[in-house]
Amino acid sequence: MTGEIKNLDGDKAVAAPADDGGGAAAGAGHGKKGGKNKLSLVPLIFLIFFEVAGGPYGAEPAVQSAGPLFALLGFLIFPFIWAIPESLVTAELSTAMPGNGGFVVWADRAFGPVSGSLMGTWKYVSGAINGAAFPALCADYLARVVPAVADGGARVATIVTFNVALSVLNYTGLSVVGWSAVALGVASLSPFVLMSGIALPKIRPHRWAATAGEKDWKLFFNTLFWNLNYWDSVSTMAGEVEDPGRTFPTALMSSVAMTSLGYLLPLMAATGAVDAPPEQWGNGFFADAAGTIAGDWLKYWIEVGAVLSSIGLYSATLSSAAFQLLGMADLGLLPRVFALRAPIFNTPWVSIVVTSLITLGMSFFSFNNIVAAANFLYSLGMLLEFATFVWLRIKRPEMSRPYRVPMRLPGIVVLCLVPSGFLVFVMAIAGWKVYAISAMFTAAGLGVYYLMKFCKARGFLKFGTVDGEGLMYERRQERGNVVV
Image 1 (cartoon, rainbow, N blue to C red):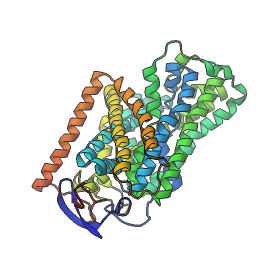
Image 2 (image 1 turned 90 degrees about the vertical axis):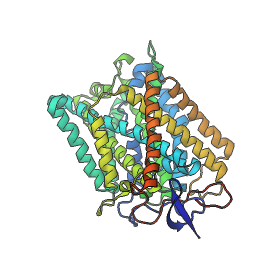
Image 3 (image 1 turned 180 degrees about the vertical axis):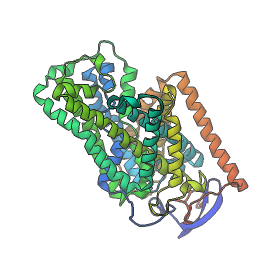
């Protein structure tokens, strides 16, 4: 059975096999076939790990803002109310629609192209801003060892070199990026494993019960949110994963366990073994704690690990963002040029270059309010994602789902309501500047959608997939059996 596929607003594309509700046609339109450069289980686990965390670096403000007790409780409980629900949603929808673009595809399928385009704007802006922080962070960590790169031309050169080198790495393919993530993950986590072991005889459990005298709950919750989100980012690369129906659920659950323990165990070791007040727990305090526990050698190792973690974080973020643009091009939401792949490595080289240039430009700015707006936009995207998940369960129960969250509809609603409540809380405590910046980005996203619609209608730009196999799936309207 075949159906006419129309992209964006009804223009006819090539005929492709009709989707029986799920994955049958989901992989079409994604470039060369075959297993070359496909992601297997272990690299996928570490890519997810770097999409989300990259190690316990950055968890220190949770102790600083509320004390060891609340920090430990937060990293113990928060994975259950946030990380696991988001991972379950990602596993089901990624295996049901295993094509590149991820959450953009899901929103488009549930609510139409405007929703898909908005989802793409919110998530891409959020990811690009987060990615822009890592080259600067790498330069900051290197400055501790090599003070000459702290400012001036040396700092600029460091940031540019970082960006270009990792862009080239991404160009060589996801398989290379994935196995590089494995090596970086082992290297950046190893000093914390050693620190936790050496700290065991020095731990005094009563220290875990300490709390901060003056608590900063906004910083506390933002720290938890910052360190445990973006589980769905890997969905944009679903078309590049070997046997996604089996690989995705296993990889996501393994990464949730690794990430959660990667925060909790070092926090227990450092807060239990080091007698330091919460006020001292600023960014980078893990290195000082390691020095106290084991000596300067471990302190320096953790500082080097922070640089390696920044490399892994940026590389994973760049991959996710680039394949998101490719997926949006396959849907007809962006021009066809974003779906172009390199002839040898089969990577979306135009999307990689564009994303690299955007993040490089942002790396030289100080943008605290924009970072807060990125979290706000990410929250909007997650609310739409949870709504998409529930809506597809109601409207498309027949959809093929190789992995299905083992819950009926009431359980699914509760699964999504709990993290949604937290998202609303995070959005409610944002300031007016964040609201204004987020509104501007949202308006810009709508502007891009209607600009693409105009360009397509006038024939100014080429849309559709590069390989001529049609879009990833058919858009259907609930009007009898009409396929549009």
